[in-house]
Image 1 (cartoon, rainbow, N blue to C red):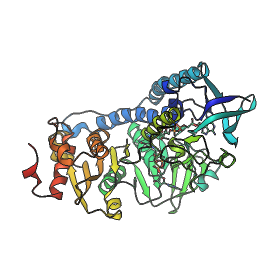
Image 2 (image 1 turned 90 degrees about the vertical axis):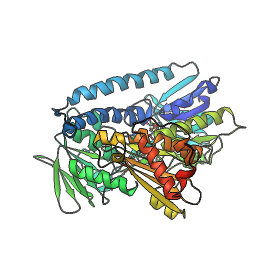
Image 3 (image 1 turned 60 degrees about the vertical axis):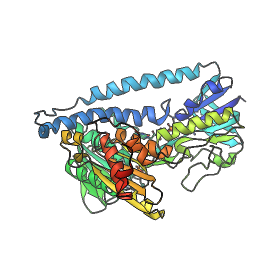
Image 4 (image 1 turned 60 degrees about the horizontal axis):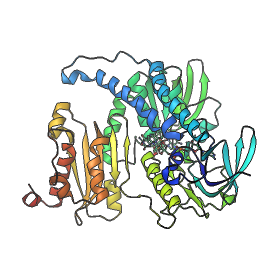
Length: 468
Ligand SMILES: Cc1cc2nc3c(=O)[nH]c(=O)nc-3n(C[C@H](O)[C@H](O)[C@H](O)COP(=O)(O)OP(=O)(O)OC[C@H]3O[C@@H](n4cnc5c(N)ncnc54)[C@H](O)[C@@H]3O)c2cc1C
Ligand SMILES: NC(=O)c1ccc[n+]([C@@H]2O[C@H](COP(=O)([O-])OP(=O)(O)OC[C@H]3O[C@@H](n4cnc5c(N)ncnc54)[C@H](O)[C@@H]3O)[C@@H](O)[C@H]2O)c1
């Protein structure tokens, strides 16, 4: 029975654990999926954003008239875009796999793993099952797309984000089920590249967990660009002569060429045998971990989507750095960073957020103060002829703290960074605003002006005491 110092389940963020810190250890990586390297590289962040970029360009080309430029979007060469993207990604995944397979101190097991006892796993290899044990085990098994029961019960094939980006051709008509991150990004990609997109959203709009101004702006743009159906669920799918016919709960039907389901991702703990290993799970299936990444089983750690309430790559990466340190330094444990977790949705318009929404801050009992900064009230906003983009800041009047920042508009994911930094480092807002130069007339002035506006809401006389 092979035994290793460290056994890692999952080659996504789990793979990045194998750093110089653990160079002397004998490490095994178990990967049961079709690709080596996990979600982000193969079917997640990286390919989606590589599709978002041409979608952004197509969108711009179609809407440049307001700047006095006559451009048109004349169509997308989908196979060329797809092959360019995966022609870059697939070799990276393949060489990463080869590197681990041939590594001097690494062993790669290509099969699904399940615990059969304490730090003991059976891996279903193509040549038959093998039992593997480790002094330490890291569960980095990620999450996977789920299907609503009515869709799972249908025999009509549907796509998830795992398969939609490899379609042989750009579909003429696409139904997207869901109103969250993936639905918003994929609607932008396919809609801007030329597909007629219908969105079936269960709630009353898209990105409902975001700040009011943000989801309102996204809804308005979505209603313009796509056929947005809200308050509906898909009750059945049938293959008709003219395409797939989706029945919706409001009694209507939609006929499309392809269906993409994006209704959330569940932690991949089903079939992992956590019971046998003494690993406790939350009711939603996530592995229970303490602040250092330790599960309830001795010597078993977890990181990333399999345990985190935020399914985000920068979160998984930070947790991987923490667990890598903790494996090497058991007497000097580091902690997962739980505060100021930012996110961005690369749809059109782009969305970025960190911290609490106004409603969450009110619910938490803060003395809430907020400020809405329009992009259009800054010099670069004039250049953009922008009328819809904004930055909403939420603060606490009593403490002067920034509690949340929410942006919708061009470069939201970039402009938000000084606000993330202010929250993460606890820098007083007066210092963030006036303790540095802000390049004029860059779009970052949206963040600068938003902070100044919030400070004034907190104290109308603040400008008299601000450093120059
Ligand atoms: C379409 C899409 C777009 C996204 N875009 C972004 C983005 O822009 N920014 C962002 O921050 N996040 C994004 N995410 C989320 C991000 O991809 C994940 O948070 C991150 O990849 C999670 O990393 P992980 O290491 O926890 O899991 P994964 O990368 O999913 O790795 C887990 C691995 O474990 C393997 N595995 C699972 N169970 C077993 C088992 N029992 N035995 C063996 N192997 C197993 C899986 O096959 C998988 O390869 C996106 C996700 C999706 C789906
Ligand atoms: N840019 C990014 O950082 C990025 C991009 C894509 C995905 N992700 C991560 O992946 C996760 C999964 O993405 P997602 O879009 O699948 O999930 P999500 O949680 O973002 O959104 C799921 C959506 O589906 C809806 N829904 C749930 N059940 C439904 C049902 N039965 N019928 C119809 N609608 C239903 C929800 O109301 C919600 O609008 C995200 O939460 C995010 O953490 C991140």
